[in-house]
Amino acid sequence: MTCKCPRMSDSAYDMDTDQDYSEEEARLKSFCNFPSSCPVSASTLARAGFYYTGDGDCVKCFSCLAVVEGWQHGDTAIGKHRKNSPNCTFINGFNNLRSDCIQTQLPSTLNSHPHMAANGFQNSAIELNGESGSEVTADFLLRTGRVVDMSRPKYPRHIEFCSEEARLKTFQNWPSYALLTPKELANAGLFFTGIDDQVKCFCCGGKLMNWEPSDRAWIEHSKHFPDCLFVLGRDVGNVALASSNIPGSRRGSEIPDCTAMNTFKARLESFDGWSYPADKEAIAKAGFYRIGNGDTTKCFNCGGTLHCWKPKDDPWEEHAKEFPGCKFLIEEKGQHFINRAQLARPVLHKVVNIIT
Image (cartoon, rainbow, N blue to C red; front, side, top):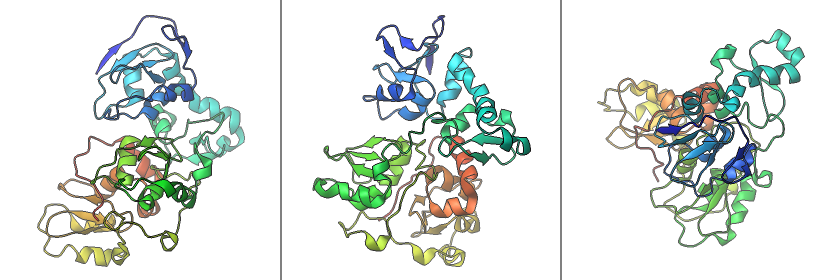
């Protein structure tokens, strides 16, 4: 990671382009040609005050004009921004954003609940499970959407496609060479843009294309847009479509029905002959059952698979890191647990996919 921090007064304008990047939306638009291989998503960088310079993975802060490049797995946009430009007005503003927003919008509520944060979507309050203000970091607030759009909600970006059925209808002219089915893509929050095999998320607006045979919609969505509130499992108004109402599509790439393993007992029985060091009971409780003779496991609900288990792995945490949108996971552990796991998400050390 390299950074160049010019000693200049804060400015919302780039002196080279004369472009105002003070608005997150303007910054996000600058990432049109941002390399998809970058481990930190464009949406995360834009929220952290950066816009794309057009050179490699080099980004620049609209406020302090700090330039950061060479992003690596494990980097956080806010963390690197603050580390390399500790005096940035924009970044330091997040330290006061929580208290300012709460005092102006929810004074009566906070008199009895001191540890609350404003929710930009409903202008209500969300309990932070007893966290103190200092523990609610800017990165946590950004990742969980708690400081996103405090003034004017923008999510979901495409309200007209909140319905899975509406998304599915956009695939009428889906190219025959495309490798994934409309059903799987629509279920993952994606609709067809009409360009090649390009799809777009109704919530975060992220675009994906050039699908490969081994790709799975949920996996790619969460990998390239990990901050998407839909991927994180937040209620953004998605209206799911019952499986019985979804038209049939090509065999071999649909998410399999794993309802036979919806009980802990059934899942645990699948581990008969298990000789690996990981706790099979803990894995089964986290929703996974064994596939084949190896250590590959699959969630009965979301269909996500994990293998290469290690003795110290926490199955629930691994589930939350890789498949945060799983309904079973959300019901059992709650959104707070998932958000924490996502924030602590390291470089992927497991092979994840959906077996068909």
